Image (cartoon, helix red, strand yellow):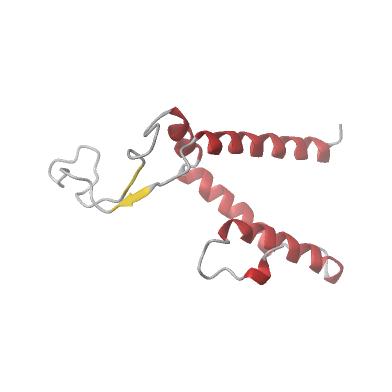
Length: 127
């Protein structure tokens, strides 16, 4: 197997893992709370002041179950930041000049697709 084929196989396996974990997590509703009830700055043992924002999935089946926990851990800040850096490098990459501009645009449209629900997303960007 060539180095390129190995890389593609590796990426596909990682995406398959991410998909399995995301599908095992509760899909919705995840709720962002602005306050942690009963936690005050003087009482917080984890350093969070009263009023910290938290994600709450307790109102959904499985609550803080294994599927949700694994999904949360997989999307830890370090990994998200690494993915952002990789995507920024893809955006900034020179794709070999004008002959590759259509391919670059198509890849940018694909990178934007997860944000299709954002109010600033334009339908003409959809690949």
